Length: 159
Image (spheres, rainbow, N blue to C red):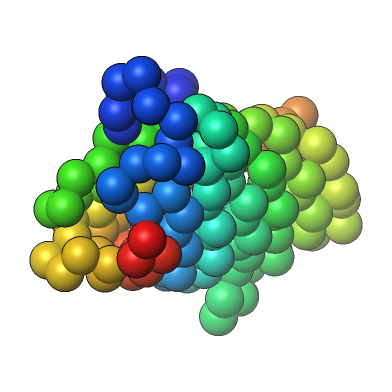
């Protein structure tokens, strides 16, 4: 997965856009440490905050397992990306460094590591400042990578 989304507006500073320049996503979903070959991990959560600074978009996110019966994993990420946005949809892509910690799936040993996070959001907006959609994500590192998807509720700033 890679950062691939186009520009929201041409030749304008993102902070002067008529569309919201920040948004939050709250969601739950599923993840896998072996690309869904055997079984998925337990349900997981996400809380993302996205904000424009000049023409750049940033995402600060935290996610982790809930209802854990398998080894626990958590991630904090700070990504850079872009969005394509209208009154009716939000498409965005982000990539950046992440800090992951938890218990290794095969041994249960605790670990912490730095990796690369990717996030793609596809959100429909039935109301101006409220949407629902999916988020595809991954965390790549040398100890315990994972991939997954979530259903997210999107709330924008209303600016």
